[in-house]
Image 1 (cartoon, rainbow, N blue to C red):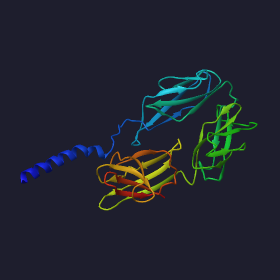
Image 2: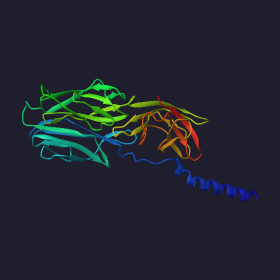
Image 3: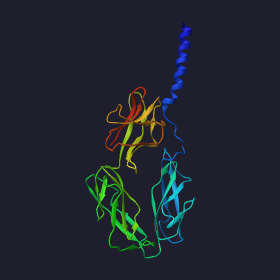
Length: 305
């Protein structure tokens, strides 16, 4: 009888080990891409001049590195871009450059080509802040410059918001916050558009918290909930994050220290990581949890403030 029980226990232990690894989380390739940011040595050119555009890639663990990308260009009659990111001006006007890799698209850069040293080549937007509360206003200022960076006097600017449901902008550059989110504001004069001015609307652009372990579990480190450029939220675990290991650990958003909204499996138990959340507002939840889904146990919680 003792032998049968021992054999049964060993078989049960063996079968449980087969299923346990599948509950721990999901592996993420180190070289997968979360975001791409591009910059240019110059965004205003005369005909035949060149500019170097550089792409910086970021993986889900927030490591940044250069890499090969596919370039897109909306108007090759204004400028061309080769596989190495070298832009060559071909004719007067504006074109938009972006980089794409693994289905991820970068920010947009506007390249302006002019035929005259006195023509408007750049429109710059400045503001005392890059965020505004819902219902409040923020004054933006536009400045036109020639290709050498000298300020020019122009008759007026045309202002626009890419999402008036989040923020509106009037003819004088006054932005009014409508609801939480982020928008791109542009100013145009003499046919020249500014680069996008990104503005966050809401009580703030991010909330932060520190994890504490619950019960006999150890969870520590900083977490940030912030608005991403595409108006979704990101949960960012800092590099000092650490959690006890366990089966089926998940990241949750919650208004208590149990249950809530399942975000994703916890991909690793130490170090930085980022999780995308859609359909959620910045102030909708109070806690970020490390939650053991199979057993309904909270390993740790961070209150967002």
